[in-house]
Amino acid sequence: MNQQIKQAREAEILKLGPNAQSRVDSVVTWFKAQIGEEATKHLVGMMVTADIVGAMERVVTRFANQGVASLNASGRDMAPRSISDEEWNNMSYHQKAEYQRQFVSQRGR
Image 1 (cartoon, rainbow, N blue to C red):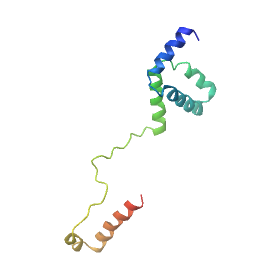
Image 2 (image 1 turned 30 degrees about the vertical axis):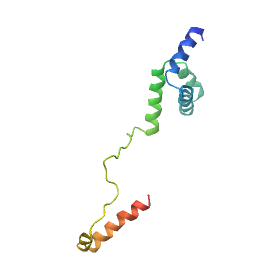
Image 3 (image 1 turned 90 degrees about the horizontal axis):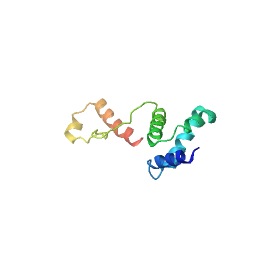
Image 4 (image 1 turned 135 degrees about the vertical axis):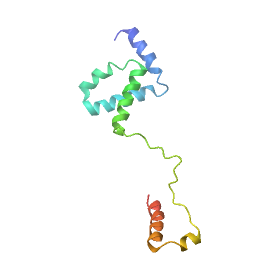
């Protein structure tokens, strides 16, 4: 590789931050596992800018997540709420059993 091109590539990759090399290595390792070493060699030659590496990281993430968006459960009240004695006394047997199952399932997670 031409020295100027090599220096330009190194400067560009440094834009990825202090973990630049490990980020590049992670992408390369993933692609080797997916498409093989020979095909990955061609992609490595294209990894000359931080934007290209970032785009390849997004491909890896998409495949790793299988296209599923991450879940943000903020604002959800996941724990069953406590009830008053009066509410408990007004419940049927089946309602009480269902209410208790909520607590058992929470402990089992």
